[in-house]
Image (cartoon, rainbow, N blue to C red):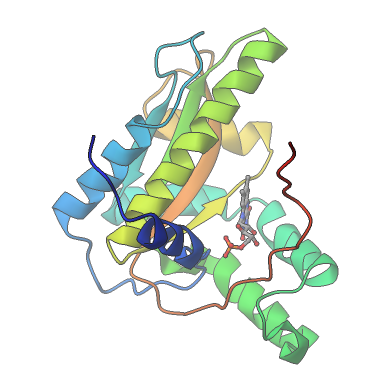
Amino acid sequence: MTRFDPFQTLELIKSRRTIRKFDYTRALPEDALQRVLEAGTWAPYSPYYIQGWKFIAFRGEARDTVASIIIRSRAILKYLRYMYEHSPYGAEHESWEEHEWKEYAHEFAKNLGNAPVIILGFVPKDPHPSIRFHLLASAFAASQNMMLQATAEGLGTGLISFKSPHLEAELVLTAGLEVDKWSFVFAMNLGYAAERPSASPRQDGLVEIRG
Ligand SMILES: Cc1cc2nc3c(=O)[nH]c(=O)nc-3n(C[C@H](O)[C@H](O)[C@H](O)COP(=O)(O)O)c2cc1C
């Protein structure tokens, strides 16, 4: 079995940051985008659906259409507001004045940080809560695979989540999927980062080894 450097792997995982400012002018290498999507499909999945997901990457005008739908969600700003009020943003959070954060948040909300690629994640609609739970969990596991592969490619990523039946349905339709068969799960920004946020601290005491 191939051995991977465990220290490098952990460094890769730790170096992934949520990016909210992208360099729109730098196109992604085609093969890097392919690998990011492929990484998603290698995530663990629950057995109710054999890889019950669809990940669709949008670029150019198609990306702008998707972004124009997502930015209508008031949750984008609300989310960042909540973040500002409830958790430290990066190690330098103490120095973020409220107005600076507001500007940062509004800049992001205008066009999703100008990410050149937006990947939408969808799962099949299923009436059973337990199956829905498994589908969502599998889709988010895949999102992490994609984010880690993107990090290895030198690219930045950021997840965007919101609940809005109307906008979600628009995204499903825009992706060319049937509204009664598919649910929107996440949008993921992807591109070269135009910021280098520091990591918000991880708390001690959340993991244990017993026995
Ligand atoms: C399920 C999930 C949903 C998220 N949704 C959003 C979002 O809607 N908007 C956003 O700006 N960040 C979103 N994030 C990113 C988190 O805010 C970010 O991961 C967290 O602040 C930790 O920062 P880091 O990713 O740089 O380690 C989401 C993350 C997860 C796991």
